Length: 327
Image (tube, rainbow, N blue to C red):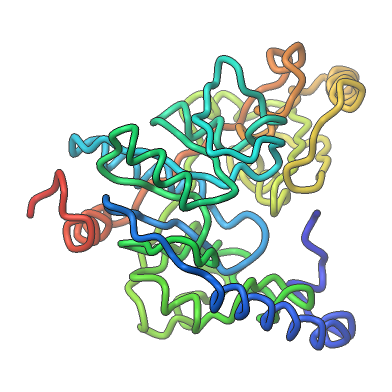
């Protein structure tokens, strides 16, 4: 689904749905009380968020895993496999699996390190341990009670922030901010903090600032006419990135998060771009969901997360993970 506008602005719709959000909170509490969490034998870093929709978790997972790999750590990546048909646990193989099998995000993760998808996260962690992982980085799962993480990082988009501050479905919050902070050792704010996230954290947790920077190949879009499209949590962020790059955005189409593109949809976008003398552009996550024949006709806007203060991350890894580092 695409995030409704009132998740940011509030209003009567948010107020009317607030009683339903109490049921959401009750259900989450019952789920936690019934869980028997597994404690992995190796350090588990959970990269989670408190809001529905894209906050920048997957780029954060890749950035944290890259740091561990640079330390010589054998890293395993764990994902639920949202949007895929396989329940798992299964090792993602980019040569045979598609986004329809395992989801779009695991295909990106598997390009960096061995990746397992599993609806049962504990079973996925056990499989990674069997495969020899010395540390596990989990994409999402802060609200999943089946595992006990060694280190939790709460990722918040600096532009969207916490929205209207209400719980699903009245707002974007999966749980109250206070309870999310209890599970996290630090908060990662992705992008400029235009929503005042730091003020809402109020010094209760250290804040790591990250920037999503376009890959060098994306810089070639500067001055080009582009037709953008995206099916992620906050598609408008993609339009903003294209504008910031200096591209001339002649059109933009937003789809639901994890939208499965059909050949007809993609060809219509490609033909529309051609008639406007523009380049069709989408995200790496979206590209994983494109029909194979169409991928070569679409330019991928690749981004990576960089840290304003890399020492802040390394200090956390030294403190909580303690392998391959300086301690």
